Length: 551
Image (tube, rainbow, N blue to C red; front, side):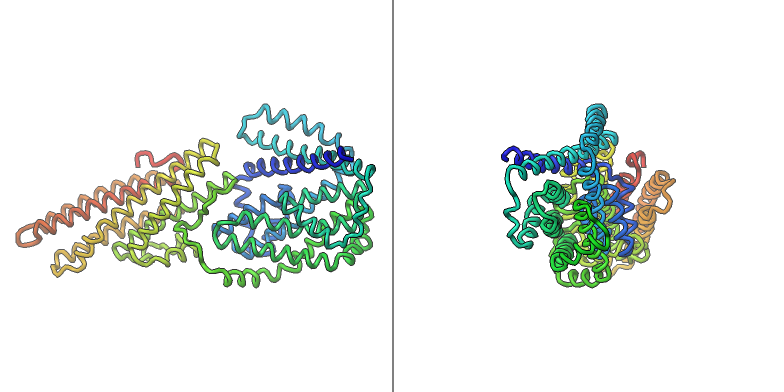
């Protein structure tokens, strides 16, 4: 009796280890193409649902898909309603994995499956470089092997327990108790797949009747929603909305499935013709998740709007895309950092334009900024506020960068992140230069001397031309000659500095501008030149694959 229980318990632990190993390797294998697929195919609810279903079926991990979706929503790359559609699709897709477990894990000789996999994956993990694609594929296969070995342990352990002790004594409990048990197991181990494996093992061994296994599976529907709650803790309002919406949807699914449990069991047995109890259990889970998706898809817009109105904007972070925590997936963490650096460059551009009262429309800033970015910038309409926010954002990006280095093992990714952080430092230098001349600029604007007042127009025109060219480079329409354009911009910046300096000399004299005013103009010219040079260097660090070079 005790040996059987411990064997089943060990099987659960090995199953969890297999899931962890598969998800860890998938996290590294889920490269930029997969992330772009997830981003580009979520423009409407139906496409988002199908994307969640297909990607989960292919990756065999709803956790990977759900956590990526949560991160993309928090970064503003996916709308809330589309994120919920992806998660509904992932819930349906994960039942296909359970179908594989029920078919292969219990319908065939498991040793014939896991022995070859163990040999292939074990040798692969030993032979291939630690962070290579082949090594991650080997780890994925090793995790899959652990699942099949674990199923064997659970089958034998459950069978031994049934033979030694009559587990049917608990049949007198109401089905609601098993719903709570299913919820509790899933909450503790944070895997609905593992809960399903436990229910399948117990059902296969005859430890529990079919209706009890169904109740456990129903409870796991709500338990798995808590994973996103834990992942969203301490993050922005967008992620919290996704987590709460997921609880609402899965909670409603659990309630409806429990109320209609026996009619749905009849549909599975009679209408679908499922006689094998293991296949019938998987079919029941598929049926309730598919019915939930069809029922709630039309109302995702309403639900998302209610949640958006209910949540006040309590996110006081200066950065837009970063969270206090770095995503565990290296590729995703790096992409979020890139988005924040890109936005930071645009923020500095807007700050410097504001310093000379240059309309953003003349720089086509509206074409550079997303709706979320425009909303972030609109909250700071004074130069002092913009600069303070830039300093705070720089600090948050530095903290994120330090933690990001621990996630990145690829030297190329580390070098890329380092260049992006350097771009932030250079851009901040540019912003400081424009802030430092604020008093001198105001002196020109308020001057009753026409010569001094006219100098503001000269500076403003020169600044507008430079910023317009920087904005054009940030548009990234044609990147084939970026290096040459950066070099040309730097040369023109030096020429502009010299022209402005010569113009200042021309208005110098006892009957024109006194030495004090000339010194003010020279200081402004030097600061603007230095700021433009720093901004071009920042563009080189961000846009060029190997840094700015000689730009």
